[in-house]
Length: 229
Length: 330
Image (cartoon, rainbow over all chains, first blue to last red; front, side, top):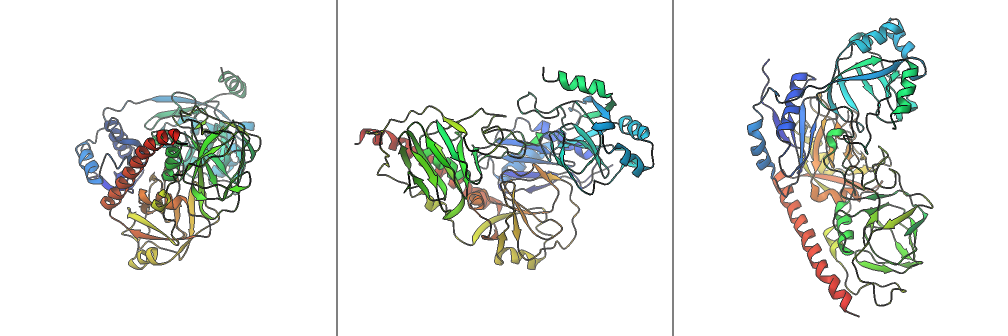
């Protein structure tokens, strides 16, 4: 499918926004990720921030003018392949239902499915990490089975634990940190998605493909105990 | 060693922020008014990256168990040393046992306290800045609390002749003139992706009507109250990168102006982004103040920023000359 040329626009005097398209599309996302990688060593650029179909470059205006940066970036815009990207496939263990997934039954009722069927469909799909944002380590995932789409809770919980796996509308996601939240919680992973003292700080990276693997409460507990070692 | 007797309204350790982590969803943060923070550091001979204390409207009460060179810049929060007014925008020697307090917030919103040697906390992801929302950096990711003890690093500055008494060098700074806090604030805006979709009359309103800074404003963003604005065509926007000073127009028609602790991406239409040279003025807006926006070409904004950066470099160089002069005078 042909796509138009990317649109480049100033995001103020110290960032440049490069937009590849206006829809959530793995091919557009891949172009953004490939460009971020191609520009990894560009001096004077502090941050390369991909989103669904765009890339923001944050730069030092004492190093680059807007026009100068546009000129420097333009030769890289033709590459649509993103061939140089490595494909990482990750498995995310999730303890579904029970105390770790208090909304599993509600999601099942909403979707007209048995709870086991919700688990089977959620853990049966492959998900793409489009980008990280919202909070540190939070992955915007694509690939949720539309049959599992469930609106948010009417009243958000005042506290959702780190690792909680939830559904909000047509999105699924994992809370990297404890926070208030309105997502429907169907399970929890013992993985710590974000730890600023760890290298790398985030388990997930844009472009990753991941699957959820059901685990039992005993394995969940033992992995929670073991991860601080 | 500095003991926190009262933390003030919101006092956090900040430095130049945490660039290079936005792709992880980590906000750059740092001092909201990075210009005032940089001047505070320069005044006490600190490197630009030293951590300072950002104090919001109501300042803290601090007791200095050891003597220290300090400086206070940014907002005028009525600094007092043992009850007497303490001048800002210059270095001050506080003898051991000094109690630094603050009173009525006179002008601006955020003041910066630098101590020679910088505040010592462990850098996380390359920065000592406090990320309040994510809960890390600075003092364990939280504001100052009563009873906290913060340490200052080593400083190469010489002591005054009599270190048992407060000392204010005769030279001072008129640098605050470079930071006009005129009211209503005029923020220059580099038009963004959805600027053209804003009807002509709404664009004019941005420049002529006063938008009031709402109470629900913080380091993440300022909520502006004013005439509701509407895009001519309802733009469907995917989440994309945003930055400090980005002016968003949510569907309700009331503007949001993003602060340093913003999220790394956002999905609301973007009218533009405030020029970096006006970020200090943005940072000093307090709830109830009014603000107007004036379009500026990106090239002009970058020139103004480079001039500001040059002024800071000159200031740093001239202060580097001041310090030895000060030490030899009596």
